[in-house]
Length: 385
Ligand code: P1T
Figure (cartoon, rainbow, N blue to C red):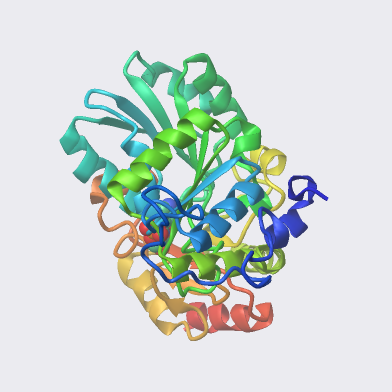
């Protein structure tokens, strides 16, 4: 059977994979080498130098392409390195329309690095897809969407945005880090580029930093491969192996993440000490209908604001947690709690942050796959004190 025809839960394990040619190893070996022997200049077994390509990275790139229903995968040293490669498709004067609620590091890369090279960024709310129309002009070359957004869990209608992008001949890139291809496949909804911080759910074990891009179009893939090789922020063999291993259990982990996420979200929503909870699975979430249409579940990322919440309340709550670890990042098997205003989104000026709802009292949870009753008890003790 061609790997392309497999269902998602088999693609995570077999997609794009073949036993290693040397000894039939079932898992691709970690080809920890920088270079490859040539019998004559340019005559080799397919690899010349590990910045250009490495067999372990190739195995991961094929897996990424398979699970995202794309054709070409590219692995980078981090999620931000993957975003950096996309932005290098642009030229001074080009404009980007981006969701106004996004990972603080992405915002920092846009504003503090690429604005310096003459790229113009417009950060807007995209919950109503038509909002983007008035920001599109002849210079607009890229629309950057995170959905669900980090950390407000806004849902953007990928198909609706893609219809507008296609008509206007603007590239659409979707950061699929929070959803993963288990929950949504943006390329099937019309996106041109899907991006991942594979550091999160794809790796899944909080032991690796890695980024990914997946595309369908050959011309776009070649431009990105050129940038990947020319700029050189590639993932190393060991890190590529770890993410490939992580992907093999993505579907079972995500299933439990989603089950636990839903229980925690509903627990928080009815808790007397909690004011607001942000999770796309709630029937009253503003874009719940879109989430139901474009996702196969609602994920395990949840943000909330404690009642009467101020900065100090939020800090006390996260400090008291015992099973949730206070840490940056998300998507690992273990539950994490974060304080976006002072951690992941601290690089966004307070005024900008608050416009999209990232108030000082906001707490973000990455619900892991522990026994959910232990997680609920932990939140209970932390909120009750
Ligand atoms: O950390 P890195 O692998 O470079 O990925 C950056 C990135 C990109 N996109 C999204 C949606 C992300 O959440 C991240 C990284 N985020 C965190 C570290 C965090 O705790 O939110």
